[in-house]
Structures are given as structure tokens and as C-alpha cells.
Image 1 (cartoon, helix red, strand yellow):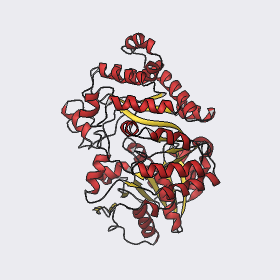
Image 2 (cartoon, one colour):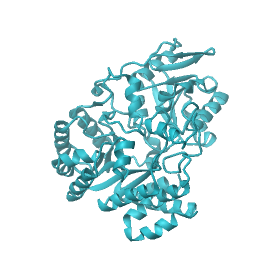
Image 3 (cartoon, rainbow, N blue to C red):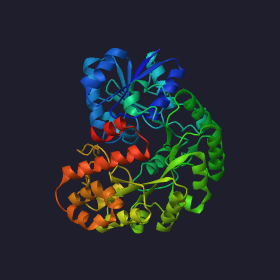
Length: 475
């Protein structure tokens, strides 16, 4: 029996890790999790307490420096522990195996591969032929082929919702539980990894899959019985991608059996063309719908980002959502290659027009191997070798910190990101905001952004005050 310690730097419940925990626990192994950025303070004590023989680190691009530092320390203090890297960054950057700290990594969907790998390590069997596994043995690197993704998601064990119990108050376990009813996205936005995912898995494999309504309801019934949270957050890239029949069946069952407030991410054009959906969502208990606007300029949204979404659909969908008394959250992208300052104001104005309750702004981060990053390189906004080196090793650690592109008006873009929600909420302040954004008040703008974001999350996501303060003031 193996003892596995998952290590992560952000205080959130990762569904991917919870799925892995369920998969290996079914095989008789034990799992725990350690959360924190500081090795000595957050990770080392858990290593002493749990005494794992396997450590799993899941990471996204712009977290790899942290993960390598953690691995270095573990190798120094606990040389017998096997460290397995996984998640989006190893999946798309296979050269990550060349890092001195990386001996084993799992690429792609990991439930089957991780379970097979852990069992092989426990029994001291060879791992150099396990599909989805890249490994370094005696200085030689083995890159094994990908296995087909699991087509029937109903076959998966439900996520291990006890894994994060130790961190309950910090993650707001009783406040919220995360769910996913599908995997993948059928759309081709140029800033997103989903395009790369389709290419990576191959056209013969249907990457986009949906669980059956009954399977999702069964998991929700379990959550309601064991945790009874205040709300459910669906993290599907596109909720209801299986079509109207799936949505109708699921929402009817949800309204009869679950009755916990929930929120979803959808597309504005789907809502605009199916005006009955907001009514069904409201009846089932949906209190927030989020959709992506990205840019208020249609050319940027549809020709550069390839979102294929018209302003008229955004406006119509917003009206339908507001009619049902559902909160409207929008996702907006600033600092897009080819975007001008006046285009950002178009995005603000569109959010004002649709009366977005929660206009959430993000700064474009150029994930390597995505089409929009290639555009940024071609426009001279990034170094020519950005995609060739281990991109993501920057001072920018999230979509809210700043831009790494070489814009002439970079300071103004970053200021508008921080003032975005204030501008949407108070259109009369626009003249003053335009002047203020040209000046250097980064600290003040950052505090304004954090306060408004914290307030919005507390109100819209029904967070307790301690959780809101913890998440948006001290992280």
C-alpha cells in the first residue's frame, strides 16, 4: 500500500487531484494533501506527519518555479520519496522532464495512468512503458505514448471530497462544493489550451465528453447528504454542451432532488437562441450565470480571439438572464494582441450596457503553443524564442497581476484592469478614470481592485466574511 501526499500552492479544492485520490484509494492506497507556498512552513511538517513514499505535484504554467523548488527540497530531505509531476504544464511542455528535479511526470488525463504508476512504484516494477508517463531512469529519458481518453465519464469514481477536510475553513468547504459534468470544450478560442488539447489527443478521439444526468445527480445527492453546502459551482468549460435534451433532463432532476443554489458557465449565443434556458435554470436554483465577452469589440472577439459571438447575442442573453433575477457575471480579457486602449473602453461600455452584476476582468497571459501567443510573437510583443524556452518563468503569477507583453501603454492597460469594475459600476466616473489610468498609482489601484473583487465574490458567491478577507486581501 502506497502513501501519497499531493502538494499544491493555492488554497483551493482541485477536482483533478480529488479524482486521482479516489482512483488510487480504490486500489487500497492512502492519500493526503499539503497546501502552501513555503516549504518549511507548509509542506515539510506534512511530510513528517504523513511519511509518504509518493508525492504528487499538479501544476499550471507560471507555477513551475515553485514546484521545482519544492521538489528540490523534498529530494534533499527525503531522497527515498518518488515525486510525480502532472497537470497542464507537463502535459503541454514535455521538455519539463529535462529539469534536474523532474524524474517522473504524467501527461494528459491521469486517473488511469497515475493509478498504474503508483502501483508499479509500490511493487518496484518498471515504469518506463506506462502510457502517459514520461520518466528519467539512469539518465535516459522515456517518453511513452498517450492512451485514449476515457470516453465514458460515468465510469470514473466520484472525487474524494474528504481529501481537503483538514483545510475546511480556509477553502469554505461548507460554503461551496465544486462539480464538473463534462470535460473539454468544442470551441476554438485562440487564447485557450483546448485547441492544443484536440491536437494533442488526435482527431480520432472525441475529447469533449459529458457525464449522464443521472450520474451527476447521484454525486450531488452524496454531496448533499455528507456536506450539504450552501452552493454548488459547476466548473465545466461550457455547461450543457451535450445539448438541450441533457440540460432539460438534468435541471428537472436537480430542481426535484438537489435544490442547492448553483452557478454555471455558458455561452451567450446559446442562451440567446434558447430563451427558455434561463427560466429552467432559475427554477432549478441557479443564482449566477457567467459567460465570456472577452472584448467589447466584435472584430477582436471574432477575428482575433475566434470566439464567434455577436454583440446582439450578448445583449439578448443578458436581458433574458436579468429577467429571471439571475446574477450575470462576465469574463473580460484585457491586453489582447492587436487591442488598443479605446477597445478596452468598448469592453467597459458593453458591460455597462448589459448591466453586468459581476464584470470580471483578466489580463491576457500568453500560454505557449496557443494561437494568440503566436500572434503576440509575430507582433513583436514577445521575444521570438518565447515558445522555445520554458515560458511562464516570469514575475507574473496570475491573470490579475500584470501583462508580460511589451506594450507601449502597458501601465495604462494594467491600471484599467484594476479599475475595470469601478468603471462598469459607475459610468459617470469614466472621464476621471480615463485620466487616472494614465498615471502611476499602482498600489492604490491594486487595493481598489482587491476590495471590489472581494466584495463581489462575498456577495455573489455567498462567501462568509472570513473566507472573503482571506481570499482577496492576504493571498
